[in-house]
Image (cartoon, rainbow, N blue to C red):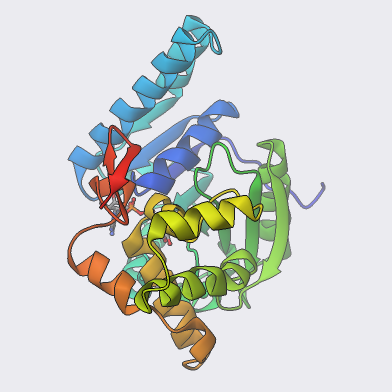
Length: 295
Ligand code: NAI
């Protein structure tokens, strides 16, 4: 595509569930990737996870030792944002808060080169609103992966009001090069998937609150109805805090539309620190990442 901007070096900010997955996708596609997190211990943990995922694939004969070593070498930690100055594309996957994302991108504007594309993996925050804090919002777009990023095929490329066509086209082509199914959406609350999926979570959480059935019953029923996962196990995978933040953001953005009202049951899980798989307990308890018993 003539419009396309050349992307070699990729940086990912936020080494949590999504950041590591996205960094892995980019490294597998052959890019040099730098991974940065505000908490260096989190970056170290993510790189350890990455190394054990690769070792597991080597052990199962899915990856050669040589390819695993090359992948490990392509994904390296960054100790500060300043180390991301050479990136052609920075993908942000930090906490789902407008003010914190705006602050981060404003800082990146002073660090990254003129041609660098800035992308947010936000699930629900307006790209137009994030861009409002930038001197050059035309180089900002949404690049929204789904969890787990190395497995899920869909990527939404989101244009805010100011996003340049060349930035949109570059990200669509890049996601396709990375083996993804890329779709374009304009920046409206929840974009496409998170808007349409919101009532699925919401109705399940309402049923729980009304004592209709236990999480394992609701999940088993939805699986038997053809959904890959029930809403309780899925929100445990996503992270109860992340899913709650997305619900709250979509609810507010649609002017308190009752269909999207966040759940008190989910709020209680967040308050208790029962965030799902990543904290070892959510609707279910997890041992080594696997569901054990209902929590
Ligand atoms: P997470 O909680 O697993 O990881 C977030 C990471 O960002 C943490 O390691 C934290 O230390 C770091 N962080 C927070 N503030 C930072 C800052 N100012 N600078 C640098 N690092 C910072 O969260 P997760 O689930 O990876 O979500 C990240 C983003 O991706 C959110 O915007 C979320 O809405 C979006 N998302 C999440 C999905 C999911 O299923 N969990 C799916 C698709 C998008």
